[in-house]
Length: 491
Image (cartoon, rainbow, N blue to C red; front, side):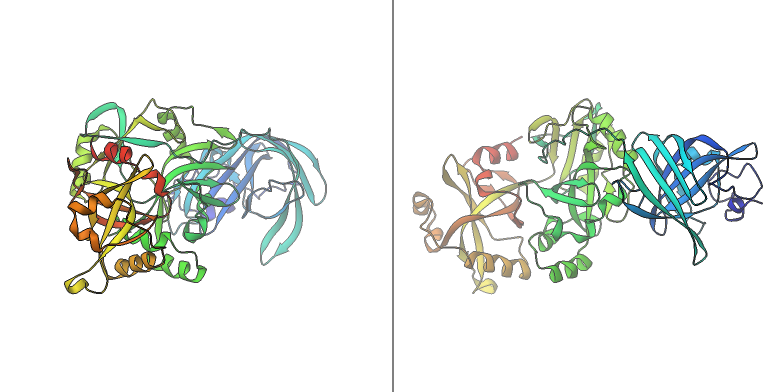
């Protein structure tokens, strides 16, 4: 058996068996072939497997190195490479999952492939050119000897021949329009509506998370800091939602305990207590190319090819055509609703479009908090309710009070926030004549935005049966408008 075969059980692993039983070739002297492949290997430790076609006698094989950090992408940069056993040529197209417990167990995806040319060889150095779909340039592999039983080399970039890429689109997410009823249509896909924080993920050598209001929120979610490891790409811009799960259901209230933290010790503590997941549902930019003018159907296909799901990164599941069944399933599981997206649609950064529709089980609204009332009974000495408003032009318009949806922690947090705000005169004194309970309210500067769930917007312009969900920092008070409330509450 070859070294390659000795390490594998082919009745278990889907990998192809070897085509030749012989010693591994010497990459510094063996005749060369044309093909190369680089595989992104999510094994015990993430690494890239660089494989160059050479000849073992008359049989082509893939001479292989495991490169923990991947081939360098900057001139002069050096990365460790470990020589591994020669692989059969059938491995050049292998992409799949090696079962846990097998040698190299984990997900394998093709990162790049194409043809390679020999530039030069010496007694300790292999210099080669890659002409791939992602990589183009010249690298050295320098043999440095054996250490700890491993045949060690250094991978060094000599020349980068990649053409300059396009400027990525703005990190401004496309928005959906509320519609009244679920529907079936084979030209649309349907997915759950995730109750979390919308974020654009910019992935290259690391990951940055950008909120709807263009704030970098990466520091608040350290468990998502290596999201780029789960992307088979040089660089990518993703659209998705940061969610905290409560028994399999997204919980905005749980997430609220994470979204405002900036103290590193507290962030690390809460990341263990309330871990978050990034649910990816679109891709805007990949390997220097903008994808926003491609159809959603094309973008979704690309997304499924480049995302390797993990505990912290998941692809939003979609179904084609069957919106009504998904809506009923979402309602039964306590989800917020579903999204409907036209397969032929392009991505429009920052635009609210009817190519994306949301169908709500319950409505939610973003409101400005302008004051609060004192609690009574078992809430005596603390918060009774929050006074809610939205902007109607330049003026604030009263839309009701919310006093439910709090627990002890969120009550304490709300009081801390309110008491830190500057007091101000009542923003709508005319309302106080018809709502005497507001005469004793404490009025504050309108700088807090809260998310509330409600059943409907009444004819009097009040939110019916509102329940507090949490404060949010990814939206400015001025964005909470009467027109938007009407659009979000009246499909």
